[in-house]
Length: 164
Image (cartoon, rainbow, N blue to C red; front, side):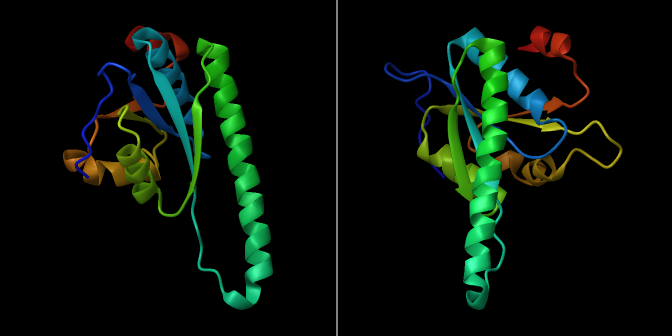
């Protein structure tokens, strides 16, 4: 992953990538990203990853129905998150749906968009830990191609306003 970032070059604008998942704290990442985008004149790319399961060929019809349902759910989640960002900052985020392993898909989206200048995630405030994506990213953060911003799930809108 050696793609040169071009976020601040002429003809480009910085974007942050936000992973929209089913966690309770997804809204914190979206809120931070939308506020950041407004302040720097940037954009937001929202990613929803559909994790694939082994698909047995004899159950291909069932697998296709499951894929369609997963895509419908992904679009609904992105609709919700995009609506939130638009309501906060009057921006229309780019939307990306990928299928596969989350870390691989996150890295691939970053690699293919030279304007992405950071990844924004939200961490759970609960005792069970920060959440699966934050935990996965913690192992890679030292070699990650862009800065990773982890927004604590316990921050209020006002707290985030002061930081973004």
